[in-house]
Image (cartoon, rainbow, N blue to C red; front, side):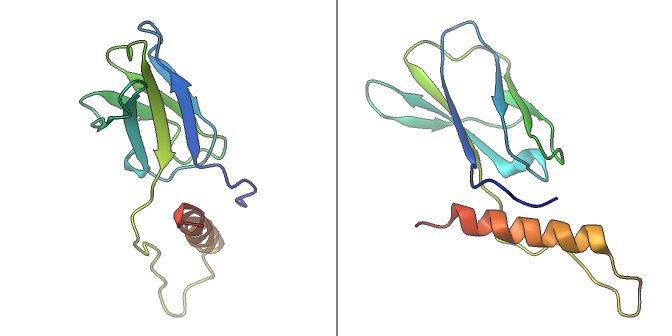
Length: 120
């Protein structure tokens, strides 16, 4: 896969009934997403906790997936779904092994995603 889009954020208005919110970008693991509720009046941001407040589907899928809340975010809140990768290098190469093209491409994709989250 190539990283053909710089999108790493999705936001939605809470309405008290919707519990499923889509994100349209690749993540490698559920924990690569940071989900925040932003109070539209005060601007206060409350980071939600994976498996406590929401679950994630679609990790590893190029087109993204969904964040599903256990309880629908209330009206007056914005749901912010952002890809924030840890600054780690997770690819291991073994000397004299066949070239691991998929692992190599994933490593380059990860690096590209990390540069996208750096301040402009």
